[in-house]
Structures are given as structure tokens and as C-alpha cells.
Length: 203
Image 1 (cartoon, one colour):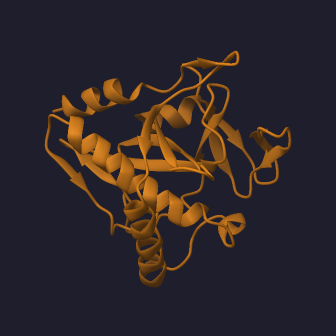
Image 2: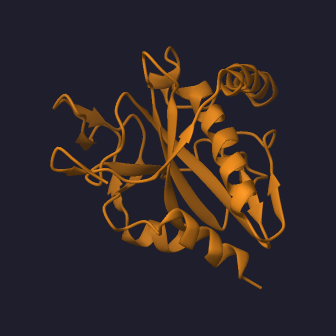
Image 3: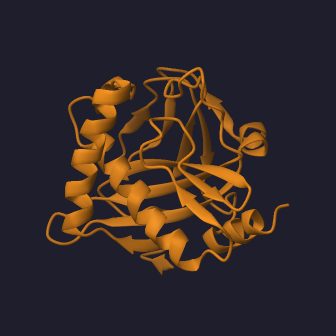
């Protein structure tokens, strides 16, 4: 989708008021169970529970179009796989923004397993979403697609804590508050349906 000369990316998925309430409750439940293990900058904003909302909204989309056995693990804890598609597991990472995503924006993945418990295995694949806050309407989760985790880490750019990840829409820098792998969305991610089909067909 081209708008004002900029290319938007992703599949738009509507967030309902029920999704918002569920996300708040679910995030609080996971905090009580596992402790708060998110970026310090998220401690006092709504990014944490909106990430839980995105998990639920993307699950609804994937379950609707998936042709293989599908499972969702909402209580697995931060850093654990979120979904199982046939024999493969997948982890969703979400950035919260006030605008729709553009192809020039970057997806981000933690470099040091800060949000994974020692007994948790890393997922086979990663997928990404951009959560758009909409002040005068329903919020939107843009599902961006995914990548196998190990190849993603090979092609992504490593950004150390304190370095600039990318630029915000207002021109200010987004500074990494922990070590990250980052990748410009562009044409780098496998589109949602193609990514899903690949996981469905794996033995």
C-alpha cells in the first residue's frame, strides 16, 4: 500500500475493546507469575500489555487461515514460544507505535534472551507485529510476517544498548535500552501468508 509516497506494510487486524481488557489482565497475571522482565523504558507506559493484546489478535488471524494443527500458549511467559504451527514453534515480537508501519521501519529482537527463563527453549521461527494506537478509533495490529529465527539472527544488524536503532516518525532517534538484533522491514520479512504456509508444510 502506497500512501503519500511511503509504502505501508503488513496485514491490518482490528483490536476490540475486549482485546484491550484481556491484554491488561493477562499482562498483570504474567507479571505475578514470572516477574517483570521487559525493557526498563516500558515500565511506566502501555507497551507491555499492548504486546499481550497483539499476541491475541495475531492468534485470531493465524487460527482463521491456518491449514495445519495450531496451538496458542498465552500463559507461557515472556520469551517463550507463542504459537505452535504444525511441528514448528513461533515467537511474536511487537513494537507499539502511534502510526502505521512503513517499509523503512525496523523490527527488533532481543539479543541476550533477557525475557526468556533458563528452562525455555527458543522458538523455531520469529514473527513480528506493529501495534498502532488510534486515539479516536479502534487500535490496529499490523501483522508484518516472519522469518526462521537462526537465519534472521544471521542477517539482522546487532545494536548495542545505548545505540540508535532507527528514527521515530517525529525525527527523534529510537535508542536501544538493551542489546538488540534489528532488521528493516522492507522486503526482508517473509509475507504473513507465505511465512505461515512454510511452517504448515514442515515435516
